[in-house]
Image (spheres, rainbow, N blue to C red):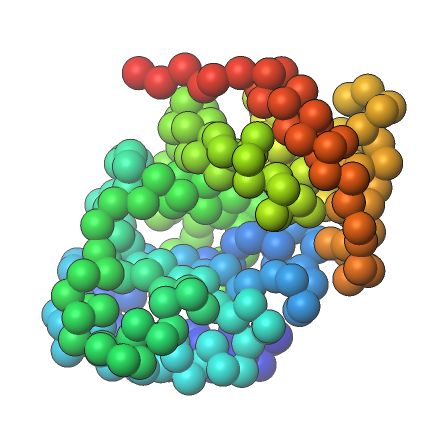
Length: 252
């Protein structure tokens, strides 16, 4: 992974030149639970001013090449301008985004992708929070010089979006939602910014024992890549309990 990150940084510097403010690593890679089979590589690129379409095309070609060398789930990358990082803007505008799910779209029609892949993304509040709390600068200005603290209500609204449909979604994505519900609760009750692994471990000490078997199964699948057969009835009951305990976040 180190060689891939070094390549990403050097090629970003070549393409973006003086416009590049910094590159920051976040997600599982900085939270002690990176799994090449289940994790993507999360990168935030900050620039001074918006990119031209030609620069976006050059940069996307670089990212796609790097993605082929990355973990199984690939690279997830966003480009934002510094003026939305500090003071923090929510929902946060972005200049460009890429993840493995968008690879076919870019390959089939790069001009359409570049024209449309920009806007606002609530998920960036969660990414910025992890960067300010636990992120790693790969290049450029220090984290504290680029990113303002994300207000708690914005962060909670951002992570709520990931689990709001858990009552139904946990049937199809049991491992992810079991652990993600746990880390959202940890933030709601203790203001802890945790990884999925840490969230599951925290929940084993803070929620009723009847749900421990489900959480342990989810941790085993996430950490050890074990094949797990879940009790879906128990998973749905867990989702109902956790959503009730988390409550609907209050927004301004």
